[in-house]
Length: 268
Length: 307
Ligand SMILES: Nc1ncnc2c1ncn2[C@@H]1O[C@H](COP(=O)(O)OP(=O)(O)OP(=O)(O)O)[C@@H](O)[C@H]1O
Ligand SMILES: [Mg+2]
Image (cartoon, rainbow over all chains, first blue to last red; front, side, top):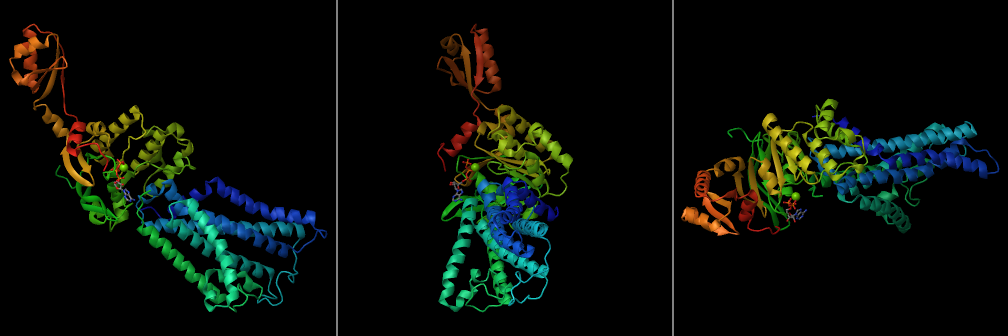
């Protein structure tokens, strides 16, 4: 049996040999440049704190990165079904679990790549334009648990939290992907549920029902903790609590994907 | 064939809902034989193949390939198999070569040289670096054959492989499959409803109808024995009535559409011809109405209705 890394290599090939992936990467590269240039053209001061600009652009970019990885994740399994390529993929000397795992690892690598590109670009562009600032008063609020820490620590944690949120959502899209035969449906439904879920949870959170704090969407916005707040203001949850809830969802999503994918009859 | 079978299907049954799609199918496929799997549309050929390659679970029964159960030791069983299931769908945004590379990475020991060799074999050398979305149906079928044979499987399973191939391509494939069976001892399992195709390339065929095997017969053996059998012979002669008189009712002679028809074996046909010629009757042609597999197939399956 060949080694497992080759399966991941295959999945990578299927991601990076597609035009859409390069369009996505292009957008991730362009946005920090466009936002910074727009700031220079439109603002009167022509000066800003490089860290604050970086954080602003990161917030914008991560919602895009989330959509991009959700598209790739939702297409990952369902796309093989809708094009029929799943047949020739599954008749190889590998268990279905290995094939599913290789797909998930490729998605994780893709999300890491986008995050790294985002970090490098948003830091690089803004530091180049506005210079390296050691003033973190605008970046880290006074009531943040990280007050007094370096901007690197703050931004590092910011990226880690954003990425954790992303990977839980990817696991969710991946679950829908292994449940549906049509990649269009899997992509559409993932994005729809993503938006609908956060809206509904936003409405629910005003009801003060105690179970609302266990809902996925009440815990996704981990970065709120960095600024001394909570994802849902009227529940005084802790980072540890939210991380545990997310871990449970992450595991459940993956168990469901795995169970469906292993059992499915391929009659495409 | 005293060897150990490469593949063994034992009472394989598939039910979807309350419908039994495959009903207690049992088969053995031996090394070096080309085995035809024949059946009308919807009889369950593709479903059986899907179960053999692990795409579908069986409801009951078992399939073993090279001694490994598809149910319990799938990777070991699959390592011996190369297959095309229905249309060979490939990644359209990749080139033919990248597609092959993709499948090659999933089997140990496929070298770049082997990929090149297979590409040449299926006649795609000139177009292998084109994106598959630019391929014609026949070219995709050839690429499908390439990915199926690349790792030299012990069992090659092809679901209607001639679909989309031109006559030259069909002939090449047929010769290649026979060669694989004879020279490399590969067991080839081909499904088709193109009966004449099967007749030309298979050693044995199983006939499937409504999910049940209704007959398994040896083709090569039959072709040989047919020479000894009496069959319908048609004589194209200048004076059929006179010819009938010469034969004095031998072989139940009769006139059909201006031709003299009678039942005779090979030696009798030669003898009849001699007597006609000696009686001064001009014989323009002799034809035997060999029952093709097609006739036999329709005879066995009853009709051409689907299901
Ligand atoms: N997923 C499914 N659900 C229910 N019935 C199915 C399913 N797939 C196939 N069938 C039924 O199983 C039977 C066998 O189908 P199968 O595709 O195996 O036939 P086939 O012999 O390959 O036909 P063809 O010559 O047309 O390719 C058909 O009656 C079909 O309707
Ligand atoms: Mg079929």
